[in-house]
Image (cartoon, rainbow, N blue to C red; front, side, top):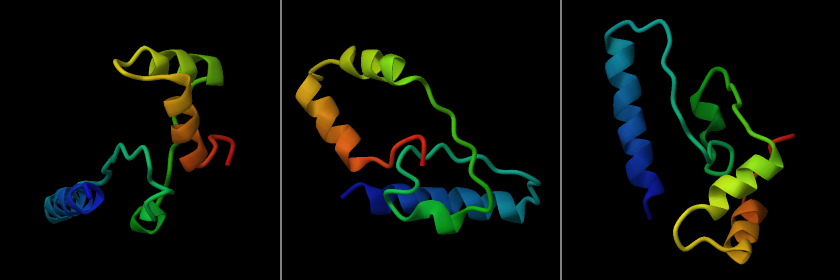
Length: 81
């Protein structure tokens, strides 16, 4: 539901920066590969944390559980890929 709105916002951001002649634009897209966004960019830089740090950060969020974390990870492309 939200992805089309986010995509439209990112497209507008890219268009504004192209028009302004920006030499580089950085997008922070956590689900770039999962949402088919790889074709929209020229290069990808991955910033990651160890699995232990990721787990601790996610489980510190309100309402988060081991089961929810497992569900999230099952839907994401592994960092190593």
